[in-house]
Image 1 (cartoon, rainbow, N blue to C red):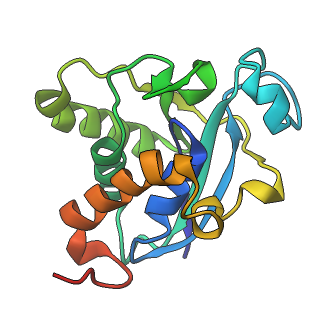
Image 2: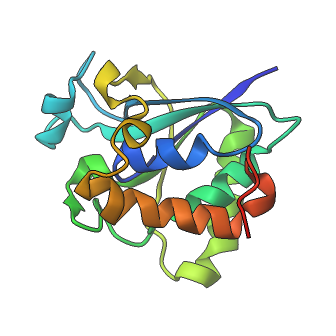
Length: 178
């Protein structure tokens, strides 16, 4: 039985590329959550006026990878201490957020923050109930796979993938070479 997690950690291209590599993750879809506009577009979300965050919907098999492990990856590959930004991506659409779908997911999110506070210090990750997930436009899917040599992918996404491969080597679909 597949479950899903909705996570915001800056640009959705970064999170999608990372979660796609994890064993037990069946699908990762870029989208938007946490805003007040129905069917938002990328252009609208980029204005910072819709209230949405760029998110990924991670469909996973909990018999293979747990929600808690997805959150461990989340808190390892992005900076949860910067409000409304990740690196040079600035605006509320780039905030750190966990949108929970059940009391169990909320409890796991709070536990993950407690686990990672000694690592990061003050964590500003928003924890909110998911109201609705809006899928992003098709051109945002598999962005890193389709554009690995673009400047953004090399400067921003590739270092996150390298960290994922180093820290979660045993959880990858394809084991990284030594």
